[in-house]
Image (spheres, rainbow, N blue to C red):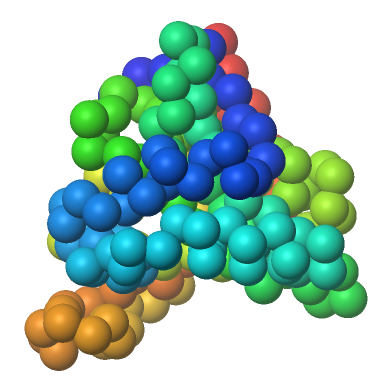
Length: 182
């Protein structure tokens, strides 16, 4: 799939509360991600408050992904940022109306670049459900390397569910970006 053009990112803040709440309340998001399902009535308010506090501590950077029409399409986050270890954990979700349009790839590329260039991260970890082929493809496009498959631990999910774990070094991200450049 082609990467979407005109995609921008901006730091998550309170103005995103209503849209995050609306999209995270869709059971399809919780079915394929670590977003709680059912989503609590105050889920977006609490998450945004907490993620802003973690941003102030320098441990988490959540971004809204916006398309060319300035519609909010999803979230990409660098979590568990360690300046000492130079590592982070990457996660994202895209609102169902915007699936399969290249927004995850475009947003991921920008957020990962931010982590490597602005935060000095050298290695990023990520995971997705084994059955989430779209997320698996996005991670591979970014240059992530499959590490292992582990049992998934999310309330309400089958104990048979598996999660694929990936890692990405800065040099591999740069090589993947160079290879996909026009």
